Amino acid sequence: MKRIAVIGTGYVGLVSGTCFAEVGHSVVCCDIDIEKISSLKAGIIPIYESGLKELVDKNTKENRLFFSTDIPEAIRKADIIYIAVGTPMSENGEADLRHVKAVANIIGANLNGYKIIVNKSTVPVGTGKLVQSVIQQVSKGRHPFDVVSNPEFLREGTAIADTMNMERAVIGATSEKAATIIEELHKPFETTIVKTNLESAEMIKYAANAFLATKISFINDIANICERVGADVEQVAEGVGLDSRIGKKFLQAGIGFGGSCFPKDTMALLQIAKSVGYPFKMIEAVIETNQKQRAHIVQKLLHVFGDLQGKTISVLGLAFKPNTNDMRSSPALDVIPMLRNLGAQVKAYDPIAIPEAKRLLGDQVVYSEDLFETAKETDACLILTEWPQVQHMNIRKLKTCLNQPILVDGRNLFRLEDMKREGFIYHSIGRPEIQGEKILTKV
Ligand code: UGA
Image 1 (cartoon, rainbow, N blue to C red):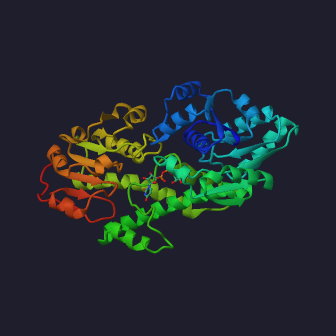
Image 2: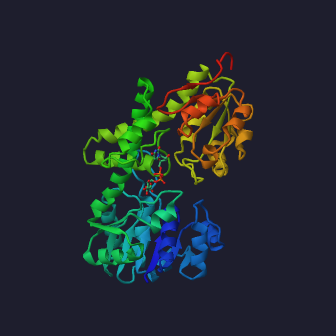
Image 3: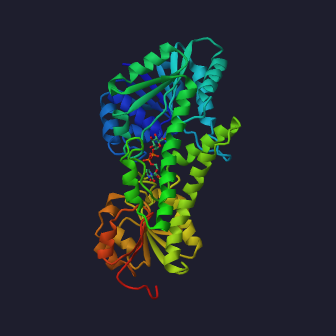
């Protein structure tokens, strides 16, 4: 059993800390946010993540998981300190390292014996070395320590399963001793260990996210071409994905990637490349295609109506993906203001992200947690998130709610034959349009 301090109790810190406790380590999750820590002590989880509350409750009760705002004390008592603070995007697209540097300073000031400092946050290549030099300076070399980069690969919505059954753990270390201790820490997860130097581990994280983002923008570009040549991107993706060198995953065409990682990390990688004088044209194109994809879905509505002035559009889904209330870089944040600027009224449904959406979109939207109430008497329905509630909705009932049976689907949730049979005017991504049973005269 190791004594671990996790500094930063956001998504990554809370999930990793809880999972380390679950496999038997003693973990204290720290944060400067007093309110967050008091809530966690009271068993209230600040994020929506399936299975997390149960694990937090269990490990707190079994005295393996603790919460604290006393970061210096947590550092002094720990063998291993995980840095899991945010690295938001700064104005020029670079990762903002303010929080990482602040934590390195506190660690340096409280070092009281050999400790391993592990970076879990997504940080530009070179940050591990920076953390090392800050700690060295502040601690004045009084105690030995090692810095390790151990990037996170969990996905929101499946974070616990992704951590407990991790496909690999990347351990970039400055010493063999530290690498072996962190490898030992991961033993209970029975995973493949990749040992590298600090820089390679930091690069693996960006390269992984950038590659996944590239797959998405690639299939979205293919989808847009499919629309022009009469092909169906779902069939194309299936045919392409069966080649095991390519794989089926991350070839779902749609309205582009969102969330707290891909948009930020593709931009940060572009900045890393720029900082070393390398023009990374491919990632620039990935980012551009992603931005265009948001407008593409709005174009589809314009194509149906000609003009959105005075129209009411129902939007199904606000979160950037299902099973989370996270709205960071959600397509809804781009698409809804576009609809409003074109003169449309917007009604929106989401099962859990409405409080977050209200904070970001305010009264631009009429919100409802009732899907059919949202669709009622609207001129068209637009799907932005593939919530199971949307995927499995009764489309006949949806049709009776709408003024006209117009469905624009940014997630390709329905079969074209079904939409045709039900008489919808159905526009999706990279697939032929379904014109419905009746001619649109006046909408
Ligand atoms: C992503 C990575 O998948 C994780 O491995 C990584 O740890 C995480 O970023 C991170 O860096 O912290 P996440 O952002 O939670 O995880 O969500 P994903 O499920 O990967 O989806 C990202 C976006 O891509 C979503 O907007 C989703 O709708 C979109 N997407 C995904 C597609 O448009 N098509 C696809 O085929 C797959």
